[in-house]
Length: 299
Image 1 (cartoon, rainbow, N blue to C red):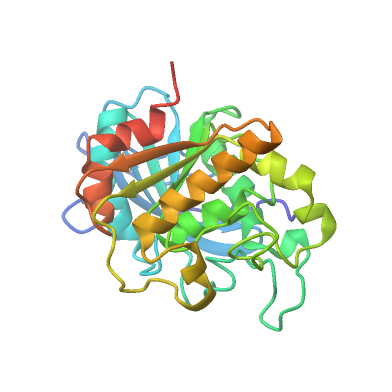
Image 2: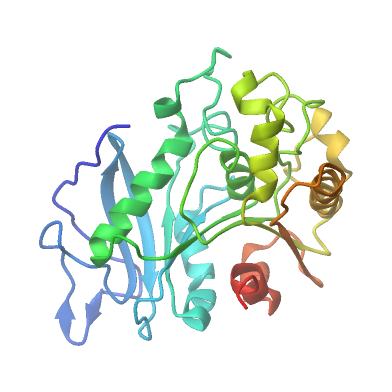
């Protein structure tokens, strides 16, 4: 993995927010600049690629950590950041939403993490989009001046697909991995090809030890009871996972739990259901159960 190299950072103005906080203009002055209170946008070079990061820091922030939030297939990172403001304020955490644009990160590189290249050849670990996550985490921690700042890794819809599949490939020190409203997921089976399961992957990425490790991870599945619409729902082989997102996410959790029970493996997943919401990030972020999804694992 290439080391993160940081360019001179320039914050981009946000509509209706001039980034003038406390009567002063917030500007980056080099690598030591912390994320400002309120909304901000910054471009950073991550693994040799320039990414735009949309951030929000609550006025009440006191060092509790951040939520690295991955957007859906709309690639509307700014809207996701805005929709997550209430959630950030309630939990006193920074929210950072990186933009993985469609031109550079099509489905095979985003939802499927670049595990296979466009020509279907198997990609090296450093080529995969999953490799961006540890670098992004280091970048945010460096900005905040804490090498151990806690964080939650969450993704909605296509971002939830990314989180579910990434979990099987790389280790993170995230407090929790939260897959929200995923349209298809990574079932703990070799009976489905990668994307839907572990089938077709090299043995070291699909053997029982790898699946056991997957089930032991701190994963939370967060789904709304009304998420049954068919728009943008993966079809074809994905229908083996269920008829709609609600069905697929319930089945994903239950099959994982059953396998762990049968094999007597550790199982650290949680299932959180929001009564009512459909496929709406704002409704899911604003729902009372969002706090349970993010932090309900704590005593």
